[in-house]
Image 1 (cartoon, rainbow, N blue to C red):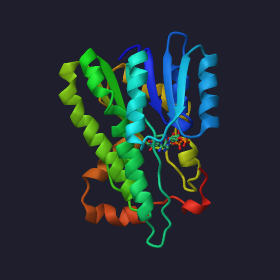
Image 2: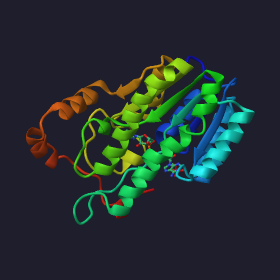
Image 3: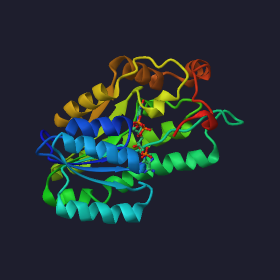
Length: 262
Ligand SMILES: NC(=O)c1ccc[n+]([C@@H]2O[C@H](COP(=O)([O-])OP(=O)(O)OC[C@H]3O[C@@H](n4cnc5c(N)ncnc54)[C@H](OP(=O)(O)O)[C@@H]3O)[C@@H](O)[C@H]2O)c1
């Protein structure tokens, strides 16, 4: 959608969501922002207001399906939403006993990254369909193209989001709804600040937000970047496991949860 005037962003209190909120903030724009940390969300809302946007913000956990649905419908009644960016997400720590995400992390990652995205678009899609217009953007990742040891739940949840979005795109297009799936490589944010390994082609959040906004305006189905990492992820996804397993076994992993912020 070229110039969305009413935009919902989940995970707006930090990182990519925050940068997106600031890049959409303008005089004629209404922003609806969701996060959990009140102080950080308020700070983003105030910064967006200073840029002239009308802002409504709320601390809601995207896994709270019923509450979120009621709230979104009431907001959409007052200010019909043109663009939904289901961005809220978490990653795990990977240095448990078996070097993978713990069982509770696995459940939480699926609940936030997959169910949370569905909970966000679910109540709004039928309303957009009735209006015959709207755009849904689902935050996936380049991790959706190859499962990495150390982050299997994160990769699986992001792959599910990507496949869901790319499938949904074809069904809802005749109703005037655009669906875009966003697949970033490494972007500088609190999620990646904790990584102690080198992240090739690490992108600044503001640059990532500008790129996402530009491609959403063009209605791109898949917004994958940066190109070299995207090509590498696609290549890894095509190669047989006997080739990739030894390679990925040496890939760096996230730090244990205890040593992580947030
Ligand atoms: N950074 C990267 O390299 C990268 C790469 C690919 C994909 N992504 C994806 O991009 C999205 C944003 O990540 P980021 O890097 O910007 O990380 P971030 O700075 O940690 O931001 C995550 C955001 O999600 C919110 N959030 C987390 N759990 C939530 C919940 N249960 N309910 C509501 N909000 C919740 C957080 O809110 P609070 O802080 O207020 O709790 C925060 O605003 C995620 O989906 C992530 O998987 C990131």
